[in-house]
Length: 305
Image (cartoon, rainbow, N blue to C red; front, side, top):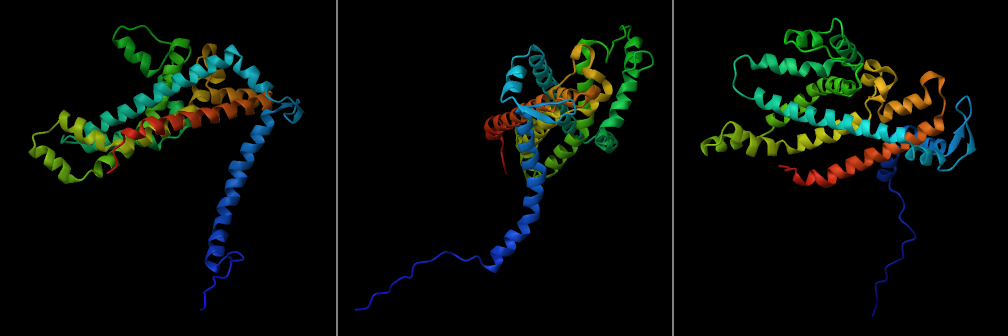
């Protein structure tokens, strides 16, 4: 009686196909290591060291930068301004775009002109949009105070009043983002099968009811995407804040975490790269936490076709 013996494998040798696959991944892995892994590791290292006059790391300080930062009343104010800026930009930006898209879908004569007009802000750079709104907010010749004057309302220091500075920057940010949001939501509505709307019409649903129970739920993936992306962009917003309100605005009313990182590391010949890196790590943790919460809470309500 013979038995079939299975020879033990000494190890799987890579096939030519697998070797080619790994070789094709090498450029991506190199870029990822150079522009993601190494900078992140360098930031962590800098956050654990002090800095000399030229910004070079010197003495190891451990978690001292984090302790000083988290125990600072100024840093708590910066976090409050950062989260307020996110709320003032994400919610109006996404909801405003949703309202615009729902209105644009109505069969109104000449609506294509408005569709193009609402998409135009997407073509403006941050610098261009900020300069335009700086002119609009000008206390003497600006359009904003000119319109208020026609209604008998006193002039507002849009960028000089601490109560209005953050709101003014947020309005600019919403205007810049609404064009992209409108394009994404318009594409989402275009992807809704026509038979769904036809069936809703036959069932007597129309207008507000159709938008509430059909269009908006089917736009869930696009809305979820815009909320996540808008949150990340708002947490990283810098250009409009720097141009409209230099030095973080009056009484630091627009000094967000990103602006604080810039101010600590580069502004006014500053070179405290250790403290700035610690703030950058905190910003990364906040970004990851916000994204994880959004995926854990909001994605469950998203309806994927």
